Image (cartoon, rainbow, N blue to C red; front, side, top):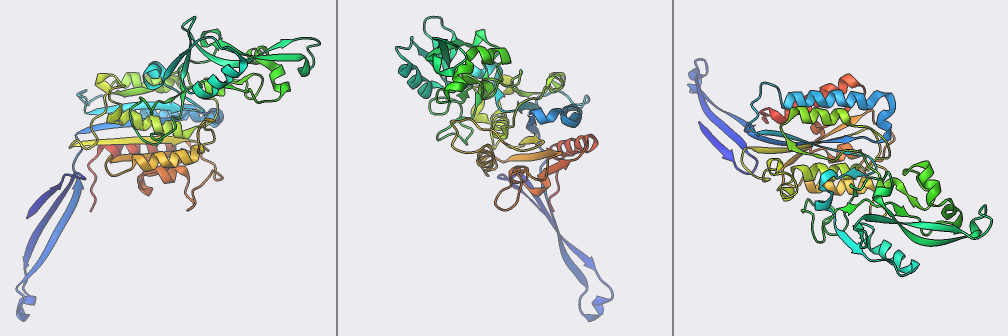
Length: 411
């Protein structure tokens, strides 16, 4: 009998050589039958870091999807953190939710860069600064407040005509609007598709409304007041697009074993807007990445990647198409998602990616070999799940929870 342990994959290999005495075959000189039995198992994981990623785009309001997701997610939390389990820190869960943007919550100052700017000397100076600093938190030097740029119109005569307005760059403080000051978008550059900690060359993009400086005079005529009257989410109307300055009201939940807090967060989710799935994937990764240990509270610091008897998993959920990316991005949300999943699944990280499609339409974008983004991102075909109704969704999440926490026989 022999037993060995693979320290790379945490697999246990067992083999035994057996001999069976024979009677009939002994008449022809074979008095025993020799055979080998072997088995491979993944060692029961002692510690788990798991991140849930929830799609809370506007389509989740259709057909009662959001309510059904809340029920299913709560069932998964119950499975992973049963009341009978000792709260010893061995199982910790995290949550990130996304729509067209993502809320960094209280971590906004730690993950984004900032720049303090004196008064603009001219419109051209303001435009240059907008183009240079629009992915940072821009702070007005005189007031110390965070602001964004927009186009301010002054009517010279007969305000019914766009041509009779003159335009100047203006600043609007976040605290003067209903915009959130903790929204973020994807980062660009060398570390766009890595889990590098935020810092020089790796800052997350701060969510500022997009100034429509180059739009037509008619759009500018609509001006700030028109957008303000419509609300901050007036897309493509007036002096700016509010989309990149709006996000869900709550930020991520770092790793915790506080079951009540996790469930309360799930039950607080609301849905609206588009679907920037790559943001959810990125932040799900950040929540379990040891590279981000300095960002999260000490008790929520992710464990090292290759620590023995430790497993990490990310559970990505969506109900449709990944269809929104920031204007500064060089790739679509779909392509960014592919790159992020490729990096997360690399052998040195050993993160298991489970995917959940909830009533996903058949016409979504596919990879060159015909896979949906959920099929592409999943660690294996067995890690990709689909649900057509609420009951199936509950069973999917419970099945994933059991898969994460149980001893898995391989052979």
